Structure formats: C-alpha cells, structure tokens
Image 1 (spheres, rainbow, N blue to C red):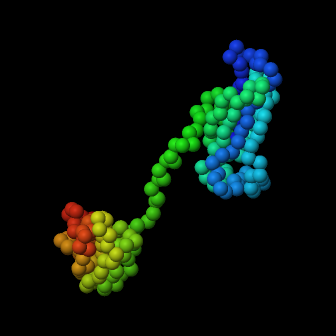
Image 2: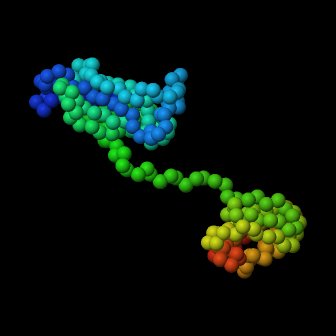
Length: 229
C-alpha cells in the first residue's frame, strides 16, 4: 500500500490562516464499474469508500501522511486519485490528479509530478508469441500459413509434395528444412512456393529460406536460401 505525504505551508512560510489546512483524496477513473481492490493482503474486495477527506497535518513541520490503495492494485485499470488542497477556511486552493502504484512505496507530493487523465494510454507492447510450426514428417505435409510465420520439418524420408494453406498477402514466411542423421531425403517444395533453393542433402544439415506472399497466393523468395552447416 503506497504511502503519500507532503508539506503544507503558507506564502509567508508559516500557517497563519484561520484553522488548519487539509487535503482530500478521491479515487477516480473507474467508469461504470464498482472499483475493486485485487491484491491488498486480506483486504480484497469492492471499495465502498472511495474518498479520504480532511487529511490533516499530524507531524511536526506541517507534514501530512496517508496510506492509499495503489492504483495498480485496483480494477478496472486506469484509475487515479485527485488530491484537493484546502485552506483553513475549507476553500479549495488547488486540485491535481496522481497515480500511486503499490510497487513504488512512497510518494512525496512536493516532488511527484501530477498525472493528466486526458493523456492517452501508452501503446501496448507487442505480444511475444510462438509463430513457428513444427510440422510432423509426412510425404505430403501441410504448412499452416494462417496461424504461423515459420515452418520447421525434419526429413526422415522423402517429401513428394505438400501444401501451404491460409496464405496472407504481404506476410513473410520462413521454411526450415532439416535432414535427419541419415540425410539424402528428397524435398519437393509445395506448388505455392516458387524459385526456392534445392534442399541440402547432407546428414543433419539445415536449409532455410524466407518468402513473401503475393496477392496471387504464391510465395516468392526475398533472398537466397541458406545452408547449415
């Protein structure tokens, strides 16, 4: 649970106004859903109290201090807090928005930059996914281009044809053809693949080549094939 604190003073460096200034915190940005604490020790549940009003100076040196549920511990995502500073008369002096994450620990509002709720969220990072299809050996294998971008097959016998299905125009597709420890297995490229290199016949060798999908559903090489070793 992050701890939020700061110092309240007057323009003459003292608090000479009538009464004692306070600060209000309110949870915002949860839309039409009831906000929920999702990982706050034993206190997991719906947040029936979404504001903390009248936080007062409780320490020497005009310092206030309060514990709040971290925004990263609240569903739905995208919540934030507003902090409204009030003078001794209860008049609002300033209101800023902040995001307090549980992992941060402490926030000194005298140095924490405000959050702008109108700022669009950052773009999501690209998902890390496995787009390599390990194709089981057969004399006529199927290469699934609708769900994979690369194909690997180990030749334990000859491949006499095969088929590439679900080709997406503009995608790049890479074929990795391995010979087993015997080698010498013929590989006839699928009819959709054009101008491919002959597959290396050496035992335990690897042939690799990348193709681009044209609008006619065929695959054309973007460069020469490579042999390993």
